[in-house]
Length: 259
Image 1 (cartoon, rainbow, N blue to C red):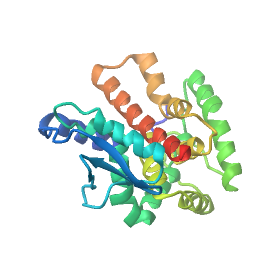
Image 2: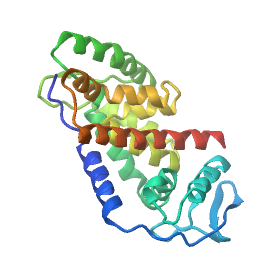
Image 3: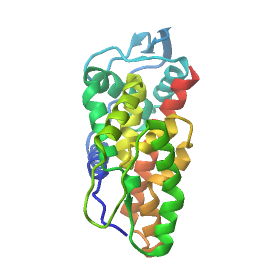
């Protein structure tokens, strides 16, 4: 396999930090009984005993679609004696959309395009032949699709030397991501970080791939290595956690489309 630059390292570090917090930080007691949805689209609120929730930055936690608001409310209804934020991925993504994406859209789009500059799909193994062919079969059609969508091409690399993509390709990526709303960008940003690709989130958002197909493409390297060489419990747990986060972000996109 090629020793491609590790574009998921930061996402992995963030997940490890979250998991550490999960076990080290005490969970707050549940303080509410009823969870309801208030307001009207595109500003639906999640209310605990009639009081609207706020984000960590104290903004009102509002959802743009009924489907998303109801799914977020269900996350809060499902809490037990203690509130576990890690069991509420949609609420966490909504918080990110409001607190992180909305005030810094340009920075978020730039970060997504940084994954595109060294996209996972562009780094290819030199051996073994079976894996080389598997990458070609899985990734080449997606690169062709992305090139047609963006009106530009992606450059492939083999071996250890990193490459970047043409500026016109990155500019087209930025324009494409700039057309998404704040909540969509929150989900797409997570998917790009978790996969090391700016192409795979676009494929899911456009309906070119299902979330499951996109994750299969994103985890091609890890799955191959596990089949060939086996894996320890920690590596499998980390991969499973990344998959859950990826699928939650894709689910957010579905709920936004559902209206």
